[in-house]
Length: 443
Image 1 (cartoon, rainbow, N blue to C red):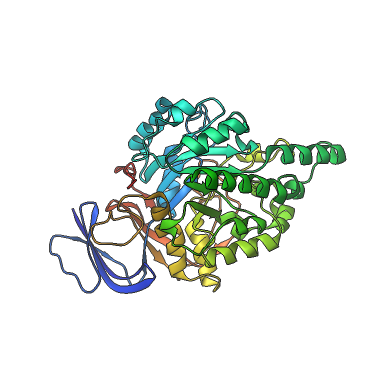
Image 2 (tube, rainbow, N blue to C red):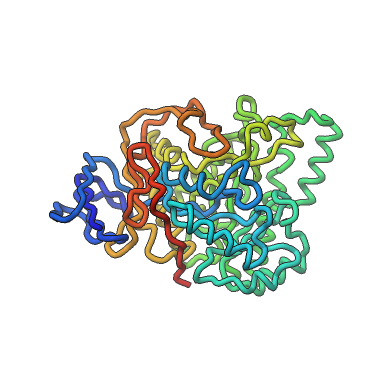
């Protein structure tokens, strides 16, 4: 059970180290220099880059109840093919994860089928606080509150319920922040104007900057009032950035933030060519927001990069604006997208690793993951920075069978992904025989 990865450039904790890395069973045994081991299976890194595996703190894998779009098995396989070794999945399935019983069913399924490591958020509603308070913070990543209308029956819009959750839940609360009343008002205005022919370009006006800021600022006020551990997901506007600070280390922050790859990559001009394929909540907005989000990522006001991977079938996506659901499938390509920014000179490679691997581990207090460290789990990804390939329907691994990136040519490629020391992905093939672990948290 030994693997020796030879001749690699290891990117970790702001440094680049050339040399070898030895894995024994599921842990990293030794890093750097020339390492010899007669018993180890050798992997020639050929001078490529070895990074800690990506930790994605927001995905929707659609199981149970929506498995015609995706399921835990299909999407976790797509994840490891893209260098994501760990995911945290959201509760808005059918039935939703609003009881401990439903939550544990998801863990049981993942233990059977996922090649990636996993954790699942407990869901909050207006009626289930007694179930939320039973959640074990040592074995569950957090509690998810939808302060917006993305999820129908999981919308938490009762002020007393929000006060109860923010004052009583002892663990991390992750929020989707969009103000429901603002969105309804904007929707009614556009329906009056366009009927059922609302253009997709109206999406950032309907799910507006105002809707985002109003909800995010409310969450921050409540967190400060009760000293709640708050993590706001998918920040999408320049205006929200003033809610966050870079003046203290991440490990000391009580209020943290996430930005998603699509809010960095796309902007409102893309509705013209992609239409519903970039319809998501919160909306992709004007280019000024994209620019401001990248600046805030670089200066550490924004803490984590994630995907909000949310697949729908193409048939569903091809409906009119009011019918087409929101969400993009992205977990297979998030690392490629951020490495594309690196290759353009927009962001440093060390910063990509920090925001996609180190920071999620720190933010969620994940045990022994997120870094290339001796004694840590061997969650690693080997990347070729000089390999050209194009996203197409033929190489998309999502169950929904499409990507908004189709036709995009990348100049970086994931060669191998290691999860707990085993090869979860290698030479274009996913190893489905070994399974990831349930995450543990140092809380």
